[in-house]
Amino acid sequence: MADLLDIIGRFAIEGHATEVRPLGEGFINDTFIATTDGPHRYILQRKNKNVFPDVPAMMDNIAAVTEHIKRKVKDPLRETLTVIPAKDGKLYYQDEDGEYWAVCLFIEDTITYDIASSPEMARQGGIGIGRFQALLADFDKPLAEVIKGFHNIRWRFTQWDASLAADQAGRKDAVAAEISFVEARRERMLSFWRMVEDGTLPMRVTHNDTKLSNILFDRSSGDVLCAIDLDTVMSSTSLNDVGDAIRSYANATVEDDPDYEKVALRLDMYEAYMDGYLSQRRDTLAPSEKEWMAFAPLYITYEQVLRFLMDYIDGDRYYKIKYPEHNLVRTRSQTALLNSMEASYPAMQKIVGKLLQ
Ligand code: GN1
Ligand code: MG
Image 1 (spheres, rainbow, N blue to C red):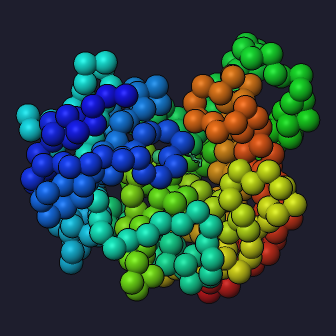
Image 2 (cartoon, rainbow, N blue to C red; image 1 turned 30 degrees about the vertical axis):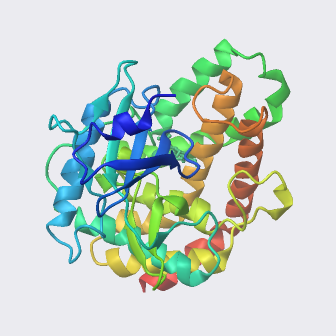
């Protein structure tokens, strides 16, 4: 492992770092927290260069978006991330092995969660992403597409077809049932995405990774503070942010629970999240966004099933895994969630309809 104290020392932090230790459970990057003899703690991340082909462009996106937000909020050091540049002014440091590192301020007195424990927490989460989108509604600089076709199911099918054809890990036959589940929904999902392609659904600045654990809550008030993990901030449909959030907030359990019986969409959490989100966005959404709002969680959960299963078929090359069948368990757990969402879809439509009245 690289010398973490040396690496953090390359950044324009206040004081000197005294200790650096691992933090959190991200699937993609390696994350650490650095204690210093100065006033702040910092987050140090090794950005995954297999996932992010252009880390400098990604950091430019993050800096541009956070600076925009900072100009609008009361407490700019708490209500969004603060990127700390390297001492040479770059937004990252590249070590001798070619690895990219980035630093931001650690926001004190905050907490993150993996499962929503109350509808109020879900409502706060909805407010958080609604506010994030609202603050960026007038952001007019171009953003780099940090991951090609990230939530574009047409592109995902291109990758999927190639994965199945290659069957690199020889696992395809063992997951025939899971593959059929994906194939049975291909056309429905493509027809949703077509509305993004033809402009029926507008493009907006979106977060694209809105799961509950990417939201900071104020430890004392319990109120939402801000969205973190801004790696995938890009242009997309706002519906994806809602869908990806519901995938975690409204799941009765964690996304990789191997006890599939425990997986279920909780309509109380769904309603609370949507109430919070729409409190910030109701007046600015296009009619098409309102019309397709309830479908968003189905689309993004489907995409997640496909991505987990594709990674399993590829031999676990994208997501970090904790045990050999982890990606298969993730696939099945998210499949159970999608089944539950499909059963609840009429009820979700009713809830959105009521909230939009
Ligand atoms: C990844 O980086 P992290 O752990 O917040 C992934 C998301 C998935 C999520 C599944 C860049 O998010 O798209 O939804 O795992 N991020 C990337 O939990 O692929
Ligand atoms: Mg992430």
